[in-house]
Length: 227
Image (cartoon, rainbow, N blue to C red; front, side):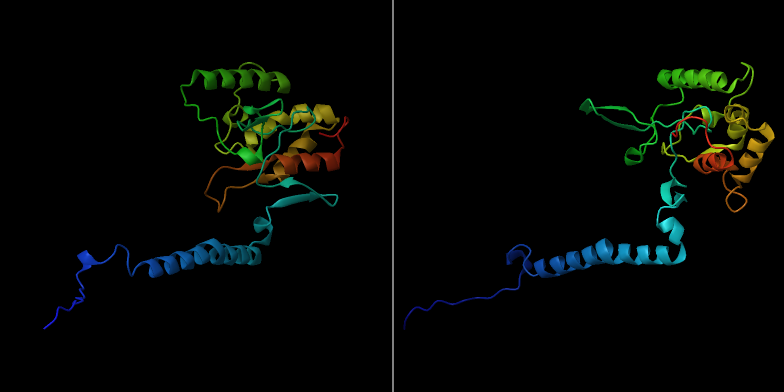
């Protein structure tokens, strides 16, 4: 009689190598969901969006004289007296002189965001006071005239393309003087470019600043160099 080695097989999970048997399904599952959510879903939603809402899917672009001049969904920074001014923007960007630092860059679409300053922030309150003073001075308003809140505060995105109707109407006399137009004509343009509440319920009536300024240029070209 001689000794023989006996091989004993076991099915006890505690004795099996870690992860044996699950590596393949994990890899297959990860690859499947990567393809589904990373490629399939974006392609499907993009296709449906371009089919049903082509203008919005392409960025709601505004074309003037054959050139893209902006988007209906992203505001622009206007400062000249003959244009309606947009809502303040708190967006920032890299300082060209020192890329490690940031500086104010209103309506920087690459850095959408708010100031994150609270309602009792001294810095915010000081900024609102300064904006209110400038708004009244630029538009020739008396010190007791109420200033619309959207004229002195930034939106959460910093890219709001609209101002309130009250804001636009207060700016109309200044724009009319700068363009040599009757105030009534400018106010009619404001009315023509006022968007109603969404579905008749959501939000407030609002004016798209870029569209309004383009309409102004069509009615009476600005007297000085373009923005």
